[in-house]
Image (cartoon, rainbow, N blue to C red):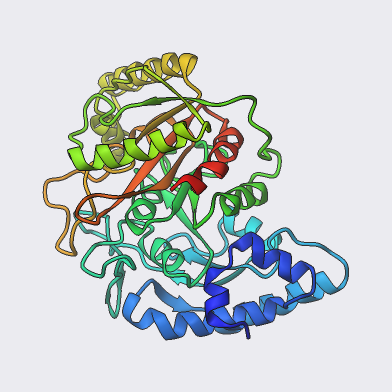
Length: 380
């Protein structure tokens, strides 16, 4: 097996490079991932189940493929799978074809609950690796916790209103939701897109290459123009959250990696339309709201390549729930509009709470979005 410390420091891209070069085997990596998860997840509760036997069998197949001369872009990379999605979803099947090895299912909220920003296991709630008093966010709670704690370098999730981006922001990692429809939606309304949680932009790019092979990231033509809004015109964002996220964006601009443009973006609150679509009861008001926000976003993207907001309007709440706050206030507009979105760690508030910086690109500009932020991550 690998040294535990070495394993938890490796990215998915680095692991695949070592396996493809013959320096380590997929079997060694997976054995280490299973051992680390078994040892550390007792307190964290990111996993609801570990698939040791099937993971080891899959790793043996990867090693045989590599030995036969078949390079696999994600050879031997242990991944965690959102429990409500399962290993046989389209995105997970494509990741497996690229060489990934699912090692277990991660926690999601129990059905019938009034809020979705936590994970449930039969051992208790999933804890946030940054502070066990905080919720890890959700609904891809266990996936975010597993990546943030180093149990796996990459985990799959799904994002119907921010369910990849919120836990990524609260656990201090990266969460990416592709353009809606690029992968099969997980709900009839088309709001719930598959997505990924990683620690590096390079791993998010590798994910995208595996699940959307005809949409490879390409070089960005010039420095992207970025328009900032802390509220999207309707959200009640805490001042310290807005300041922390904006400060991160200014660091990126000072490094010459983006140009800030003064372009207000004021949407209408997407809540009523999102709720109606999810319930299957859209009406004329729903369509008017959707079309109004679509026009605002279309006009904004005439002057900016990316939009930037905080990922959530408030910091992580405790395990007693969010109360009246809407954790999804800044995320669900882009499930409704379908734009590709990523959240990056933006730093901490004065109280030490994690903040995410959310970046939104034009429809089907997923590649440009991912390529743009690859260098940004180093400015933290």
